[in-house]
Length: 508
Image (cartoon, rainbow, N blue to C red):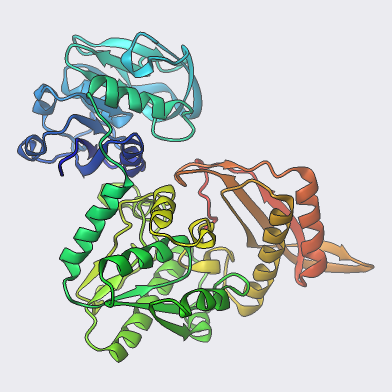
């Protein structure tokens, strides 16, 4: 790469790819490497800066993730975040101890505006905290640059060595000025010039696809969602004439979605194949209630369908997937804690017949995927479509999956989406969930005993954190009235106002 590079060293934190995304958002190229990577490799890349990620461990525990202590003597600017701050302190002679009071969530803090990280900001800031350990003794040469009521060293600085650390997470939306702090580190400490943009990233991915695939053919599971649509457009540009798009209709789609996908892609310059497999998937999912098992069953059956169809096409060696960064993060890659497995990541069987996987979006967040889609000329309807999980409604029907439950949820979800559109409501993702809770209701003059539907609508740009969308009482009331009256089997509607963290966007 000819442009400047910042290395993100991974110590198992959930937000490592988000850190890399924020760096690229600031116009600087970033790569992620394991925390214990050899120093010679770091030197060979000549980074302008290094960022140490968070992680779930305690730095003083035997066997905890560590880096070579000589990293801090390279003369390269370093920013430590959460565990990364603690590792910096531990490695340079300071002390890290358990907290008297642990901190989680948005936390008020006071920062030193003379510190380069906080230049141009007010002294009072909000930062997302998530820690049970803290810096109790600063290493020689470091000074305090921020604090909270319970964390005396929420930010530290060693200007002479260009070493900085923050206990909070500047990379997430819940730290409102976090991107400015990262930008200050990149441009005022590392000397960044901003020579990277998505055009470069697209070119790199196309080159990688061509190098990996060569003259072989590729099968893509096309759902019509943002990820698979952008993946299809990118692959078609990289390897024209070598792409076969298979749409497996597992019967777990939203209302009328299968027909809409076929109508949108059948007329395009793609080898489009539709497989109607609702009965097959429902049989495989019969009696299954555990969400992880659902995901793995659906992932495995998807691949089997691909294999069956690819056999008709000849010797197709590669399977493409629209895997993106949040899928990888939540599935426990890079030694991070597993939150939930995604069918693109955790559900592939060991005996998969394809030579390899092609995952060109694996390094992108949702907003980057949308930007790439616009860059590739995809229609607005596909680029701006809200996310839909690979396992579909299987993870939005809590408990056992049945055709009856799926149809109830499809109708309820369609009503919710219709009312959201009529009201021009603002939300980045919204959907209905059919819970496994039943309650008594009244429809007309009759007693009912039906399922409870939960509505979910969130505001987010990175899909790693979110806040509940304020939809207004009138809109929610209309939806709560229509669904029980129009969808047989549902008697109650509730609205989920849980943020992420502590929840996830999906229920399962």
